[in-house]
Length: 208
Image (cartoon, rainbow, N blue to C red):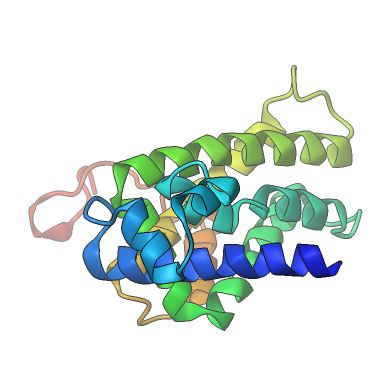
């Protein structure tokens, strides 16, 4: 990085840190851009030079996720099963949460519990899933336009990951996210969701 680039990154980091502290303490709706700029010691004009809105402060923090996921999927061993490759990529991503647990929990809680942020996150995820589907189809040697398997594998994997993420937040990060994500994938791989019949009174399966 040049000196100018380092200065810009420093300002961006200071804005992000100030915003996250206020958002965690006050909540998303009660935190204003003026409060963020005052805490960071910069002007509103400077804020809008780096971010378009409050939402962007949080969402851009995970903005490079799509590129990272695509790159890591492309780097997986060629002989690895498609579903296993996607699982390993998403599981490896949790290492970043382990390194910065408190900040990651704050960001994730805000994202999942704030409608505006959740909408932006899901909007981004649509693109991430499309990129991973295209890469998975390339690895499988199929056309994603006529073969649904790559899209189904990616969609199912993200479903497991998001479910684990929600459980992690609900438990206030008492358990390691990687462990929860692996458990979610194990449930899928073990067919634990293929329940036969409805649960009858007393816990017995109907028709047993």
